[in-house]
Image 1 (cartoon, helix red, strand yellow):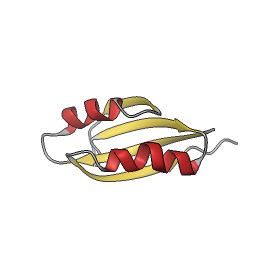
Image 2 (cartoon, one colour; image 1 turned 180 degrees about the vertical axis):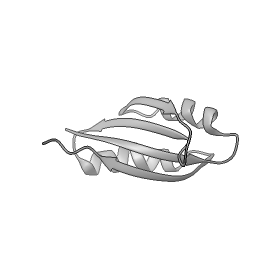
Image 3 (cartoon, helix red, strand yellow; image 1 turned 120 degrees about the horizontal axis):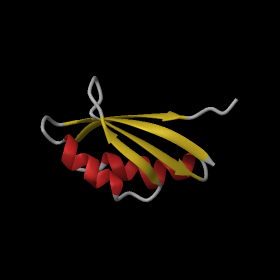
Image 4 (cartoon, rainbow, N blue to C red; image 1 turned 90 degrees about the vertical axis):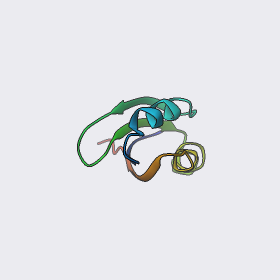
Amino acid sequence: MVTAYILVQTEVGKAGQVTEMIKGIAGVAQVDGVTGPYDVIARADAADLDELAKKVVMPMQDLEGITRTLTCPVISF
């Protein structure tokens, strides 16, 4: 199992709309609007990195209003 935080930058005024659209993506466990250099942070779970990319990150990048994402996989010690 892979968990990742996905940091999302949006077009001006689109953070709320993007947050709602991200909630509809399978594998997304939590989505929050934030302030700072990113507008939305999502936590996602997948079987492996390949599934995370294909089923969560790539569909997210196709959403209208998203300008940039940064995926941060969680490392368990």
